[in-house]
Each structure stands twice: as structure tokens, then as C-alpha cells.
Image (cartoon, rainbow, N blue to C red):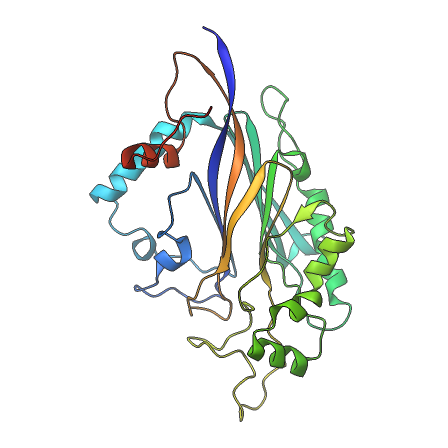
Length: 316
């Protein structure tokens, strides 16, 4: 048979959430976290920081429901096209292993395209110069993360050698303004001035710690730090003594590296479970697909969904 290579658009959902060690309640709004109101995606990446064990019943519901079994069958159909999965963990602390910061990276090949997703929790701290510790953490993660080359020795070993790379997590970058000025600008909703002083934006623009990385436009309020079960930022309620100063910040971010990716959604969720708000993003990514002329069928969940709803079109 004649072998052909197509470029397909695959939808990728990415979400990060620092859950603050809080056990989720039974009524946790997973629709807010997973953005189920939008069209389905082919890849779902959920990154968590400061996690406690999640009860599956709270998250997935009955595993024998018709909906669950239908989606599970679609996933089984697509499993042969996802190859060479691998995980690599890096601890950022004493001797590279002690401490509560670091990363978990997952890589796999979807058809002929190598993906890598890096979930990070970088160094905290709102003092001047603390951003250098975060830069150091990020550099250490990129340097030390290594994957096996695979049976045919053709798989990338380092994060940035993959075709599509996404970093997500509590990156902990702050706003380089006095706390009072930051709070005033947050109250006014003046994201432009705040972002001009955002540490991660500066690093992305300077191209030192994150050369070649990209971030979508931020049009949502800072994601940290909130009182539990509240929409009030920490320190905003008068009369509470003994509180550490915690100016609002966009600690929780999604950035990407490489070509062939386009972001369509970048926003925050509104779950009040922890002192952070979750952040979510949706991308379309180019995926190279090799197949014979006879093997002309759908390869992605979003294709299957669109075919059912009459929205599917074969690539030209």
C-alpha cells in the first residue's frame, strides 16, 4: 500500500491547580476544572501541586455508567496510536532530592509527533530577588529531566528536543510592585500595568530563563492567594492579625515551546477549594500522521465527536 503523511489538527486541554493539600468535597465542580462546555479535546493534561489522595468516586463517578464506558471504548480504540509513554521526575532541593519543589514530566508519541508536558512547582517567595530561585529551578528541571531513547533509539531524551512542549504549574512568579500598589491595581482590574511588572512576563521577554517559550494573553484576575472558600484575596480583610503579607499574583501558568501550536483559550477556573484558582488552556497542535490509503479513518476523539455531530471534514 502507498504510505502517506498527513498533518492533522489535534485539540489539547491543559489545566494546572495547586490544591493546597485540601481534600476535595463530593460536590467539587469538575465541569469548571475540565471546561466541558467547550468541544472535546484529544489530549487532557491535568497538573496538580500540593496534592492529597483524590477519591475516585468524587472525580470520575460510577465507572460502569454508559457515558464512562462509551468514552473508555473510544480511548481503547486510540491507544495503539499513542506510543512510548515515559515519566521523569526532578526534585529541586538539597542534593536535588530533598524539598517540596520540582517537576513531573510526561512524554509520549502521538502518531509521528513527540509531546512533552512538564508539571512544575517552583520556589516560592515574594521578596526581591526570589525570582532568581525560580529561574534556577526551571533551568535545573530542563537540564536534569531525561527520558529513555526507546527501543529504536529515535526518541528525544531532553524536554526541549520534543516536537510539542508545554510547561504548566505553580511557577510562583510574582508581581514586582509594592503590595499596596498591587492590591489597588487588582481592585481596578488594571491587568496591563500588573503584567508589565509580572516577573514571568519579564523573563519571557528577556529570553534568558525561558528563551523560545511563549504564553498566551492573560485576561483573568490573579490566581493567588485567596482565603479558603472565599473570593477575597489574602490580606484583604481588615482586622485579621498575624497574617503574612501575600500580594495577589499570577502564580499558576501555562507556557509552551516549539512550533505547530496555537492557543485558543487561556483562563482561570473559579473553584474555591484552595488558596489558588485553577488555570486552563486549550491548544490546537499539528500532528503528523502516517497511514496507507486504505486505512482512511478517524484518529482523534474530537474527530469522532465531530463526525457524530456532522462537523467533521477530512483534511485537504
